[in-house]
Image (cartoon, rainbow, N blue to C red; front, side, top):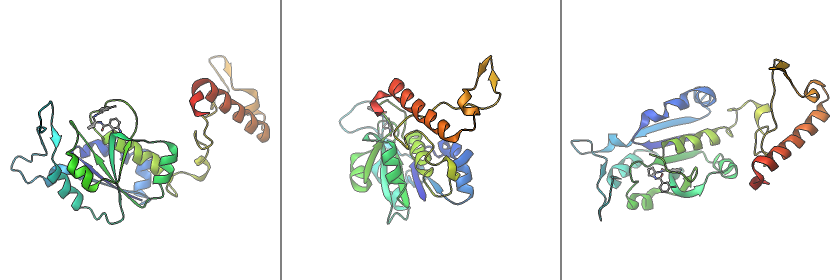
Length: 219
Ligand code: 4G1
């Protein structure tokens, strides 16, 4: 699976080189290519934004520069996604659907956003990670890459797949590890019993109880 990211802040994507996603890149299971939009400015000051027509505060990203950055990608079969607060909310269902794509181009806005004409020209879909104000689309793009990459074959070890929250539409049951007694508190006895069927049942009940309590909207 290939991701091309169009951004003014390529250094923000360094964290993806760590942990599970970093390993997946090393194993060539996913390929993340970061494109610095500024490299496509033809202005002597490398200008990438300008004041909004009609007035108002802040700056708008220039359409011509983004167009050249986009044309530099071989995006024949790519899905072009604009990370935007106006997009459809990202959820696990959407993540799973996107994991079936072979090539995704992610466009990250900054400042007051992007000239509408280049959005109309190249964007297939707008996706939002939630209803709050951010300084840019880079963190949302990383959220999408992380969540989608988990579904790529070989990225996770087989037994972690499907164990996570949402695979059954519920929150996760509580987890425990050594020591058996911490701060005077024991691990629930059932988990030490070795009775796999009863443990499975207990975890299912806990998942349901926690979801009812903390996120009844998921039920
Ligand atoms: C109006 C949030 C503006 C923000 C209303 C989730 C937010 C991209 C996302 C904004 C962004 C609300 C996202 C806002 C995002 C241009 C550059 C847009 C940053 C920008 C609720 C600023 N999921 N926000 N505007 O945050 O890119 O993907």
